[in-house]
Structure formats: structure tokens, C-alpha cells
Image (tube, rainbow, N blue to C red; front, side, top):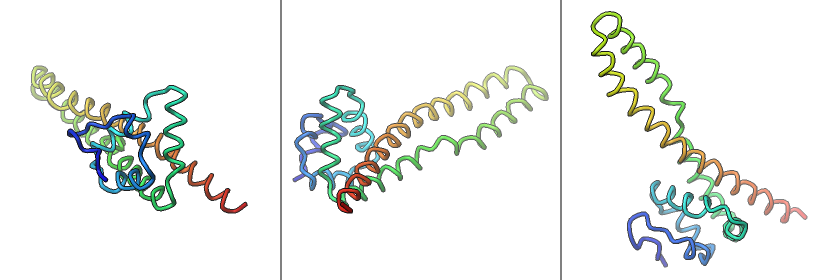
Length: 154
């Protein structure tokens, strides 16, 4: 039932297209955050019309439980990679560097800038990409959920 963990973080687009709704639900329940990110990047970043339709049909095959699990997983990833949480840290680091520059030495300020701010900014950029992917999938899942509710009502 679980053919997805062949190698760490190796998800094949053609295998995903053949998933049943139970396979997709199981993936949403058990995948690690890294596997989930690879899933989003592999399956939803290929912008061909056929692929978009296939992935949307995969989401449409999910039942309500699968949609809830998917939305919950995406919401967790979205909150985990929210880059606004670094604002306070960046302000503190900039204050420390400014104080080093003014009070101590320009050399120490340059070293502190390189060792503190650059890695923080790189992490923010990396996490921003993951968050954008999660927001995209969440939007699709919510649209499918709304579509199913409308079908049920009519």
C-alpha cells in the first residue's frame, strides 16, 4: 500500500498520477514535512496543462477526510515556514551590528553581518518558497472542498 518511500524524498510524478484516494489520504497523514514539500514541488510545479489537470483530478478524487487531512497538513507547513517570525530576530541582529559598528570596530560589524544576517536571510528565502508552495496547494484543496460542498447541496 505504501510504494512512495523508495528512496528518501523520491516521489515520481507518474506514480502520483495513479494514486487512489486512499493512497493520497495515507500520504497526507504519514508524510514528513520534507516529503510533503517534495510532493508539492514535484507534482504541482510542472506547469503543463495535462499535469495541472491530472493533479486537480487527484485532489478531486479525495473524500472529505482526505481533504481535511490535506488542508491540515498544508496549514501546518504554512505556519511552520511563515517567515514573518524572523522579523524580531532581524531587528535584534541589526541593532547588535549597529552597536558593534558604532562602539567597537567596523571589522567586527562586518564579521557579525556575515555570520548572523546572511544565513538568516538565506533561511528566510528557502522557507518562503516552501510556504508559497503550501499556500498554492491549500488554495487548490479548499477550492475542491467548496466544489464538493456545492455538488452535495444541489
